[in-house]
Image (cartoon, rainbow, N blue to C red; front, side, top):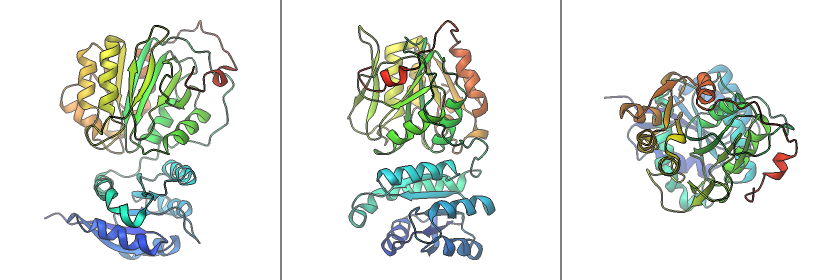
Length: 366
């Protein structure tokens, strides 16, 4: 019989130190070996208890979560799952933790005492995935942001629609991919990143500040234009719609698909129907099977499909599901994905710069 996964729970809240072990006890494959009330205690207990996975609160007195995470990455490189508040400040610090090497995160519900059991399944799944992972993928960690890029190009119709699905490990993987795409990239990018409401707007802004292409959280009516990525908001689905004056993204509130909202399959299905051979589907690192069926639809419609390689995925779930079903035309390492996209979307060097375009295209009325 396989030994249970040894988990250390780190949180300054006595309530959370009681609730998290309680909800983890429902799974026989997990053993909570201890709790710690701050970073100093956590580092000592790592040495004493040898956990395989940590859950970590970021907002703690004394040695805070970010500094604790840095020490963990420096000395042990254990998978860390951040348990984050659902505030704007919580989203910001969580994204920083992911950039520093945290495996993934779960967002605390607003009413912790009453609704914490609602995240039990999510936390258990992520602990299992963290224990099975090959460790934190640090070779593609993003650098600091550099403010608004002045050379974003004026909006033009894209040569191709690139739909991307990604989950665990996605923030760093997307940061790397987008940082390697030139400002004149001729494709229009649509992204479903499994992330809760309240996190995606800040995530999109961080990408926009640090990457040559434009990135924004999608709004219904956003035009699909070359050189821009639209990030689906948390707790919404994203589809595409052809319109006389230009093709647009539309948001929808149907129920979860594959247990997710947003769902990659919803996006891929819509793109396959709307754009056929003009579509390209990319499945990147992530748990589960969301996107596999939709990738098959894009391939059947004449589009191009690519999956991130196992060696460069934090979790090889979503790409694996599509590969095993025969829906993937190309498997590529993360560092090769930019060149794959550029091969499918050749640059048009005739386009000119318009410095004020970001301001002109920053709202849904584009």
